[in-house]
Length: 154
Image (cartoon, rainbow, N blue to C red; front, side, top):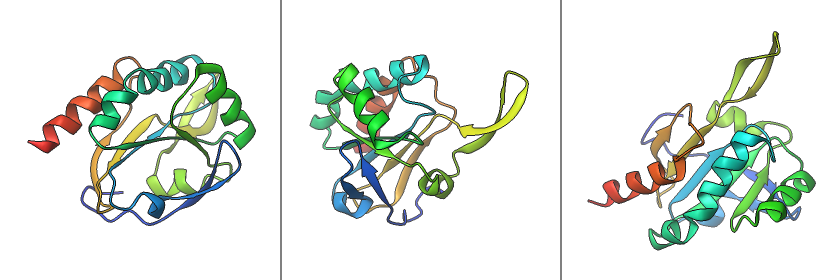
């Protein structure tokens, strides 16, 4: 995905097993954050950061969507355990991960595996890509996104 490119619609299930389309949010900016796995240490830090800054993000008029290759059931457990106030999407077949190019070769205990590289995309109200945060560090990431949103409004 390139900046200022129109983001193609996608359809995934949320943590409740309901169908969600990107076009459901047309007219509203979307923060789409990809994380490797629900309820793992880094992902928990990142997800809780978005939770702790959720009210401020809402004030900026954005929708927050978390996305990983976990099942809807795993997403629901993660959401409930940490009281996450936003939607989590299950990309079990990796369609959206591939669309956004976030699957990368990783070295896991000496084995090469494909995994999600922690990346956040900001999609404008007109559904074009306005900002990419590659190789995200979980600590302080929500603040970084919030600061960028405020900067973009200037």
